[in-house]
Image (cartoon, rainbow, N blue to C red; front, side, top):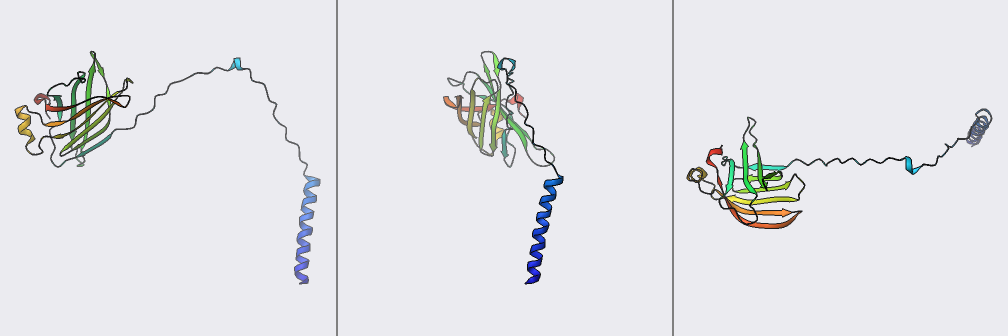
Length: 194
């Protein structure tokens, strides 16, 4: 017990000696606060720089056993409200690694000028075709095509005959709100056929 009391007394003595040494030999200088200047608002120049947000890459899903025809697809009959639609374009290829790469686009030409559409979603399967775009020009127009192949066997016979091979619904939106919608049929331009 005496040993424990002795150790405790030495520890307290060492602590007090350290505190006294610090106070005597180490002098502390008070911190100087920086002087605060008044800011003159007339000296501040504000420049606004527009940095367009980076568009995310489109979601592209291609899932089919045998490749359906790709190329430029035209509307069999242009419905009211879609006079600016020039064509829909689908292409894909299978590189050496075995994964399918491709793209789906809608080309709209409004009043003689091209209204470039950025593809957001391309989904092409053995039966279904889904394509969603938005305008790159900032006018707020976008399109959605949701359709399916008329038949999934012997599509080449329909292409050769010049008949429609995709049927679906084409929707036109302005700032996310539906402006026009119509059922459409698409046929493949034989000259652009891949």
